[in-house]
Length: 295
Ligand code: GLY
Figure 1: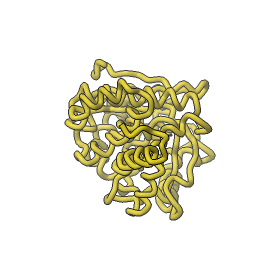
Figure 2: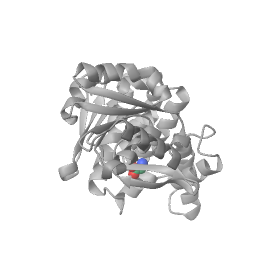
Figure 3: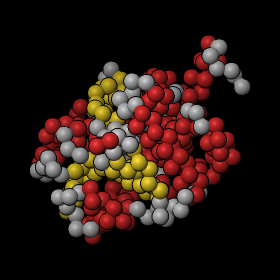
Figure 4: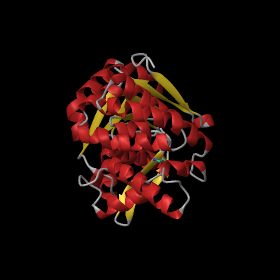
């Protein structure tokens, strides 16, 4: 793909279809690219402190240059924000900003911000539209696409939420350059999952190019993100609410969620790391059951 021009992947959901725009230099063009999706020329950007520190001013400036008025809500980073308390705080702040039903929220961050802001959008004033601007590899290849939004509860991860599709996803590969190596490796756990889901050619490509992806090599990252998004878009279009084929996207996640629960949903084990370990455990278990040849 020509990363500068970017690639556009369509999530084909009839009247709720939307586009995932993947490429470089996109945040600087956010005013122009998001304007068609913000007819009221006003938005609230929901982000976390890390993302705000690295990219917040740039996104706000780009939106304002496009004639879009911006308020920014900056949340504490980390999975603990994805809670009833975090949701209540976010909704109170949206109400204080007088976000209207015709306005749209921009979720600017990783999986936690996307899940929480997306769920808030699903229930705020009985539902407003939202845009995903994912800033981690994990969010770009998986969580920003497909409309799963949720918070965690004491009983487990993602147990309260809604299917609420974004109306646009803008994935700027440049922001991955500021990700800590650990975050990039964790996101690679989800990339690997797509390789295992039924695209042997992509798995082979990852075996040859995984190092380049993890080194942040632009062309390799662009291919990996675009291929994962294409696969996810196809699966979501076939089975939006996970009554069948979409369950494939949970490969390794049963083990992963158990491990995350044991380790407290935090820094000890990141979600993508848990998915990588979970995929390995799922295959070992499947081999023991005799439903998957060990080789
Ligand atoms: N992350 C799994 C799914 O979106 O279905």
